[in-house]
Length: 129
Image (cartoon, rainbow, N blue to C red; front, side, top):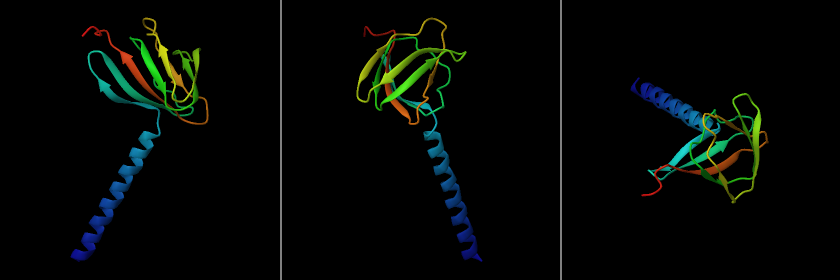
């Protein structure tokens, strides 16, 4: 009987671990940002924009450098879905984007068939230190 209980517990733990791995893989396949570094001068984050899955509405209060990790065409849309800007990122190239106008939110949209990956380094107000 103990052997059956041990097998049942082992199977249950394996099943639970498998579900956890599947959940983690699914989370990684959604558009998201991953913080990399932050201090008073800047914030750096990795961004993944999956096809047809825009990042949620957000804004940038400071200028930022973008380093494209993949090629891709990215559309920047306002809260009404109007395309404000289109960028054609080239892998291993860097770009500068100014801060957003006051009160303006946008979503990053990838209408291609492959993920777009970028590193974003956004300056902060306290750059004199």
